[in-house]
Amino acid sequence: MNLYLPVAEMSVSIFVLLGLGGVVGVLSGLFGVGGGFLMTPLLMMLGIPAPVAAATDANQIVAASISGTIAHMRRRNVDFKMGAYMVVGGLVGSKLGVQLVGYLKALGQIDFVITVLFVIMLGLIGSFMFVEGLHALRGSSKGEKSSKAPKKEPRFQLPLRTNFEASGLETSILVPLGVGLFVGVLAAILGVGGGFIMVPAMIYLIGMPTQVVVGTSLFQILFTTANTTFWQSVQNHTVDIVLALLLLIGSVIGAQIGTRLGSKLQGEQLRVLLALIVLATAAKLLLGLVLEPEELFVIGGGGH
Amino acid sequence: MRKLWTSLLLALAVAFAPAAGAALVTDLSDTHIKVSYHYQGENLLVFGSLPEKGGHVIVEVRGPEKSRTIQRKGKVMGFLWMNVEDLTVKDFPGYYALLSDAPIESFLTPEERNRLDVGHDALFNSAEYHGETAKAGPRDYFDGLLKYMGDHGLYQEKPNAVTIKRGALFRAELRMPSRAPVGDYQVVVRQWKDGQVIHRDTQGLSVAKTGIEKWLYDMAFEHPAWYGLMAVLVALFAGWFVGIITRGEAEH
Image 1 (cartoon, rainbow over the protein chains, first blue to last red):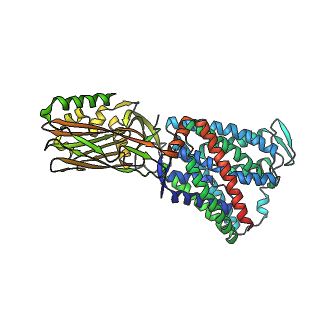
Image 2 (cartoon, each protein chain N blue to C red):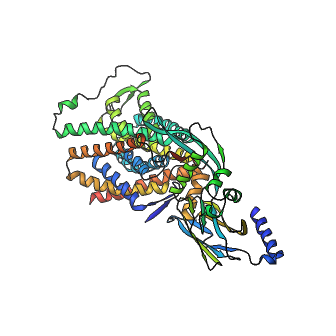
Image 3 (tube, each protein chain N blue to C red):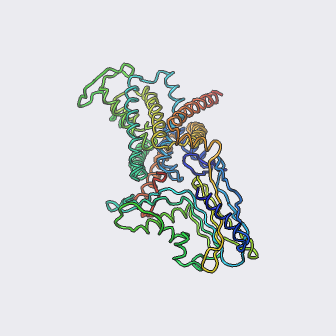
C-alpha cells in the first residue's frame, strides 16, 4: 500500500516507512538513544530529499520527546535554569542552522554537506561505541571508567559564572549556551535531537549529576526541534507532516518491542551490534561520496 | 488565451473549408488527474479518429514549464564527489512524452523536428541556458537532465506506442508517474503526411492535488508559518497521546 507524501511529493510504501520507524524505534527502545542520527540517513537512502528527511525528522523528534520531557519534569529530573540557557542557545542555533540550510540549498550543496556531516558523526559515534562495547564484552574493570570522572574544575574560567542549584554546581552561562547552540545547529541541518552529544557534554564538560542529565537534555531537545520544525517550514518548506506521523507510529511500536527485547538480551553484545549498524550506515554514506557516481548530472533545487 | 484563439481558428477552418472534411478529433481517458493520498501515478489513454488515411500520428504531451538547475558532479581533492558546476535551463517542461506510430527520425528530418519542436534535439535547440560552465557543454547538461527525467518516467520517447486501426482510429497509452509535476499539461496530436502537418488537435490536461494532499501542500507553501505551527502542535499532541497509551500498556 502506497501513500503520497504531500511535501516530499512522492509515493512511498506505508509499510516501508512504518518499518523504518519501527527499526529505529527498536534501536531506541533497546539502547535508550533517540535514533534521529539513523533516521535521517535511512530516509535519504529511501530517496527522500536530504533536506526534507532532516526537517521531517526534527518534527518527528518533537513528538518523540514530549512524553519523556513531561515524565522527567514530574520526577523533578530537569535543571530548569541550566535547561533554559541551553534552550536559548538551541533556539539561536537552530534558527542559524535553518538559515544555513537555505543558503546551502541555493548553492546546491545541501545534500553533500548533510552526507559529509553524517559520515563524520556516525563514524565517530560508531567507533566510540564499538570500542566501549568491546571493552565491556571483555569485562574490563570499572577502574578504567573512573578516569573519565566528571571534571568539576575547568582549567580555564569563563566569565559570567553563576550558580545552578538544581545541579549543585557553579559554571559560566556561556557553557550551556554554547552546548545548546552547537546542538541547535546540528538539529537543524541533520534532523537529530543531539542527545548523544549533549549528554556526554553535560556529564564531562559541565559536570552535571547524571539524574538530571537526561531530563534536561530532553527538555532542550523538545524546544530546539520544535523551533527547527517551525523555521524549516517557514523558510525551506521541507517539513512533511504525513511522513513525520508515519515515522512516529512506527517508532512508537518499535520502541515498545525494543524495550521488551532489551530486558531479555545481553546489553554488551547489543551495544556492539548497534555500533556496527551505525558504522555500516556511515560506510554506505561514505561510499556514496568517494565512488564515482552513476549519474554525473543531478537535478537539484527545482521549483525556483 | 492562445488556446481560445487556436480553437476559434480551428472552428473557422472547419466551417470554411469543407474540402478538408472532418477534423482530427481526440480525447483523453482523464483530463483532470487528481493527486490524492493514494495517488501512485496513472495510465493515460489518448485516442481519437483520423479524418484521412495514411501518414503518421505524433502524440506529444508537455507538462508545466519551470526552470531546472542541473548540477554536475566532479572530483574534489582527488577523492570526494560533489557538485562543482551548474547550468539552469529556463522554462523546461517538467514532463514530456512523445509517442508515435513509427520512429520519428524515420519520417521527420531534423529541420522538420525543429520546426515542430518535437523530440530531444528540438527540445535542446529551443531551450534557453544560463550559467557559466567550463568542462561540459550545455548538451551534456541537457542529456543529464533528460536521463534523470527518463529514469523517473518524466521523459518518454516511444516510437511505436501509437497504434492506428484501419487508418481511421488511433490510440496511445502513456504513463503519468507519481512524480509528474502538478499543473497544466498540453496534449498535441498531429497527423503528418507528405512533408507537412495535415491535421492537428490540442487537448488540455491538468494534474492537481486534491483533498488533504492539496490542503497540506497549499498550507506548506502559501501559509508556511501556520503550517509550521501546525506541524509542531500535531507532533506535541501525537507524542503526548502516544505517551499516555504506551504508559497505560506498560502498567498492565
